[in-house]
Length: 476
Image 1: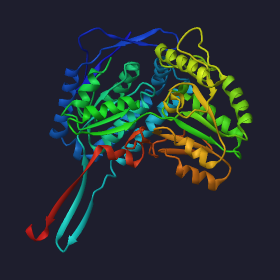
Image 2: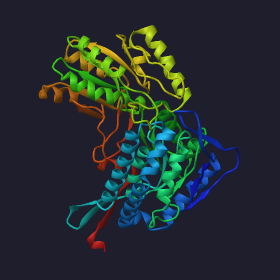
Image 3: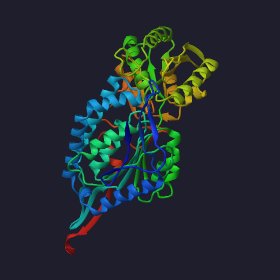
Image 4: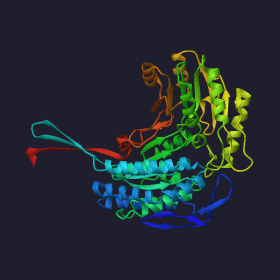
């Protein structure tokens, strides 16, 4: 049975204390175990990362960093089949979703390998002989806190730009996906050109490691993906050291379906956009805002589409939606389904399967914008149906929550599509589609959906500082 270890200063190491279990959410079987971490191990890893940052030429060698990232991508490519199988088993994803995660992660790593060699400063001559040089340099040690819902992608999208920028790193993976993370760390460790101590990782079974990382004076930047509540705690914990925080947090993505929308297309896109990863993705379509003139037609179509989704193990070729991450999350969603039945009108009520952390999709009608079902991120296969009468009401309702991570607009009027997209307060707005993510395009949120951007050229910004160097040529 596999036992996931920590990775510090170029070595995989264990730790004292009882081992944690890795469980398959589809059948409850134990897949392996992991060594839980501690604040002391986090401090040890951070000290190594800080020493390497200041004691080696890593931060000044973009060609080496590009080479390392290319090698990591090659290692991930070689381990792709093994990692896909692990993601299906430990994370509950469909085979196609797991493959998509791996392909996206490899693409992201190669993308930042290219960007590593393009980081440039600028120069300005203020007056004759008076020169201001603006240098972009690595921020220092980055603490990366990885969630369980996409354990490869959401690690790589922080780690790759951090390494490209010249930072060193300490990673804290999620307790639900230790085996996936251990295999990714093996790929990273196998990169021949990676200097020892640039990348470190400490497992977690609780909050001790995360708290230590956020508070550590040795860590200069925190890059976190997860809930808004945890993001708020991280901001508070980081205040003592005034470290930079990059936060990609919760979402409540509205899909606006106008009266001229292609309903066949909208239903196809939103079935996938809402139920991908069993709705356990922060940019999932969570609210269907539908023009009242087409609500009856859309509701009938989306109900039929959701009802037809085959829920089952990710490795079963018949499955169209996989498991939730664990039984406690299934119980949490079941309670929300009951709340939806009490507060709204049930259109399609989700049911638990006999075995595993499975729930079939839920659709419900609701008119109360103040309801927690509308205001809070639910993070599962449960979606609200809401009506609007005109464009202004659609925009008002879309912007009625504290989140602003993503949205989509369905209309055949190009002018309206762009106008509405500009007025919806969201970091990403898709037109006549939903859930398109790739390395070249930044993602991030407004409001309680976070701070900063990941992916794209801006993904480097969280990990770079700007230094002003002034000189007068007459003095040299």
